[in-house]
Length: 456
Picture 1 (tube, rainbow, N blue to C red):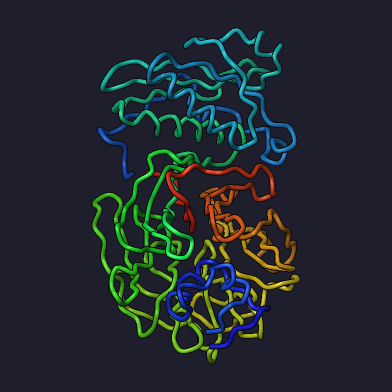
Picture 2: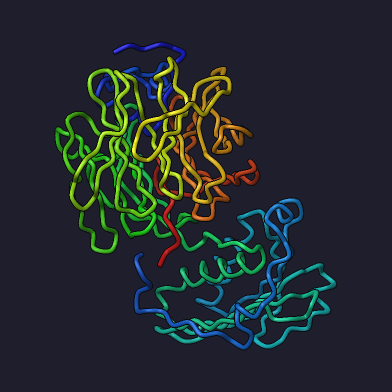
């Protein structure tokens, strides 16, 4: 194994390679800097009914996301009532204001057509009215209004188990986001991650999942796990497990709690990544002094080697949204850079040409950007670039910033940030412009976030 100070690889490779090649006492940042060249559906069901004007009859959004970043949309949100109604109001408020794209104003509680004059006076562009009623089974009626035009944009009634109140709030938030901005929201989603506790040098790392706002956190494993990946189409998470002497890739079914092993490898498997259709995993496999990329059919376990680069490290693969290409990290040219190749392997071309060395890579579900991490001058950075390598820009920096994962609409990245000395691992989110960075609360430290698709 060769190690140089200049080389850098990202979290999704470094942690696993550390297990294979590096003594436990080595600080993980030292490894990164020095490098290694070696929900299911709603419980009780959900019925949805339109109220008066249907969504299809409403005008298209006139405010773009870019406009909202410059001038957040003033929207009046009242209380939906006491008890569960107030809880729904709070979550809805947090969802919208947490984007930085909406300015939430107090609203009057009512269920009919509002008096628009007071809302116009306070500068509101939109207003919400609604009520929540019932116990055990609740009915929530919600209407979204264009204050300036004095017209209803959306009207929907939801009937479901009271236990689902939080998801209903997220669903309403997604409706408002889409009606006001013209693209799907991302509030009714979850984030898989590694829950970290214990010492810096010997942490306990367990697979966990939570709502995108940090609520409903669940620990899913008792054994050491790393580098999870959410399926883009199913309620499943693939991850690397150290529950036995041989590291293995597992797939965990969140609906049933069952898990199964993906085919064994001749080498050490690293972090998996799903294909857009959810049927294939990309898996880097460390062997000797390097690692190669494999595609693995989840159902059959059949493997196909995609790279053959003579001992170079090939890691952090990610499919393009159409499944035709793969971006990945490789030091085949002498230093870790980003490359793109066809999904079948071969014809890799270098993508990154910025200063420093590159680590993690992830393709946006929109197809318009590739997220990456980079180290230059001793600083870790999180950035994005166009799929042709142009337009590179850094969004945030820190002692370590790593493991980027896009939300389903491609507007926000989740990532891991840690403090000096490798302590205080936490999960944060940031807009793709570098706007509005926020922390997500977790019961323990958190790393390696992976964003789910919209819940179904």
